[in-house]
Amino acid sequence: MKETEAKQSWAELDRKHMLHGGVPLDAFAEKGSEMIMDEGHGLILRDVYGKEYIDALSGAVCVNLGYGREELPEAAMAQMAKLSYVMS
Image 1 (cartoon, rainbow, N blue to C red):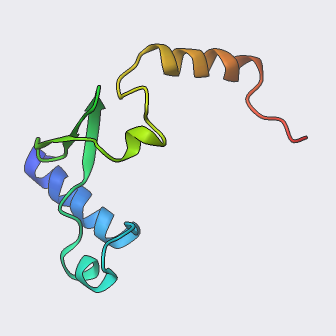
Image 2 (cartoon, rainbow, N blue to C red):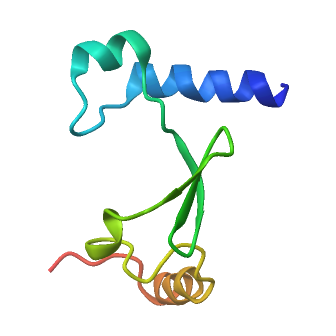
Image 3 (cartoon, rainbow, N blue to C red):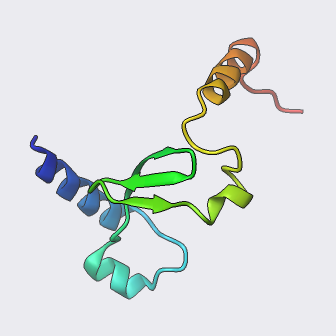
């Protein structure tokens, strides 16, 4: 699959299966989302089209340590190898 086709496929899948907060549903159903994020490094996000954005919203709540921090998935994997889930 060519890169352009893959991006169009992501956009179509996003339109069919996702709900985005703060987006009017009728407009989203018709046009889909203009921003489908693909990767992040530090405080920069990049969408599937290669456009970069400064992430000024999620850092305060969920990604306050930044994107692409290798030690975070390594620490999560080490913990999950010891104990991945417990119901208490």
